[in-house]
Length: 282
Image (cartoon, rainbow, N blue to C red; front, top):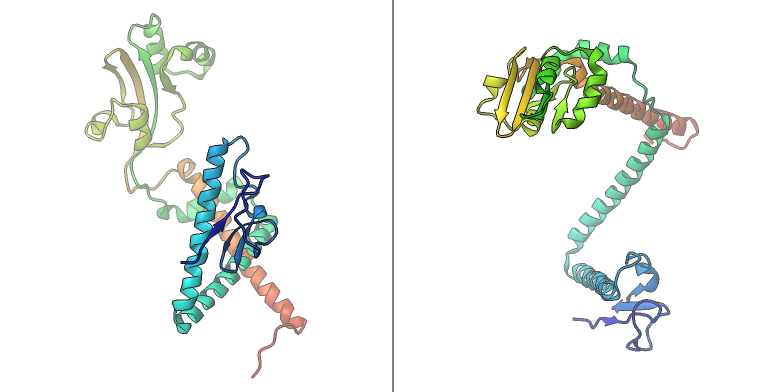
C-alpha cells in the first residue's frame, strides 16, 4: 500500500514537517501523484467547532479522500479495457443527461405559466374525475377536546352542536381553554389525521363514530370530546374537488411543462437545421 503523507498547516489546526521534498505548495496530503490542498478543505469545518472536533473532521475527510484515490487507482489498473470503456460511455451519457436536464429545467422555470385559473381546475377535474378515486376514507368534521369540568361546558356544548358563524367572537374567547379543536368542517381530511387528533377513534371502532351527520360527546378520563361528523366518503369513491384540487393543479402544471419541453426541443432542432448547424447525410 502506498504511503499516505499527512500534514495540517499552521493556519489550519497544527504544524508539522512531515512532507518530503516532492510536497507541493499548500498541499496537505498525497496519494501517488494526487495531491489534496488546503483550499479543498477550506469550508469543511463549521465556524465555532472545537479544535479537537475540527481535527477529527479534517482527518476523516482526508482518510476518505485517500481511500477513494487508492481505490480508483486500483480499479484503473485491474479492470478490463472493455469494462472501463463501458463505464466511460455511461459517464459520458450521464454528463449529457445531467447538463441537458439542468438546462431544460432552467428554461421551464423561466417560461412556464404557473397560474392556473379556478375554471381550468374545475374543467380538468370534471373531464377526468373518474381517475381521481380515493385511496382511503375521507371525512369532514369538527371537534373540541375540553376538560370535562370546564365551567362553561354546557354553553360550549350547545354552541358547538348548533354551530353558528355569528359566534366567532365566542369561539375566539373560549378556544384558548381547549386542549385541541378544529371548527372548519368544510375541509376533507384522511383517517390518519383523524386518528392522530382524536385518539379515542381507531381502526377498530371507526365505523361506530365515523358516520355522516353523527353528533357525539365521548368521555376519556379527564377529557371530553365533542364531535360532529359532517360527511364521509369511502375508499375508491370519486375524490371531492376541494380535496384533490392541489393534485389537479400539479397535473396541469406538469402537462404544461411537458408541452413546453417538447416545443423547445422541436424549436432548437428546427433552428439548427435552418442555420445549417444540423445535417443528416444520406
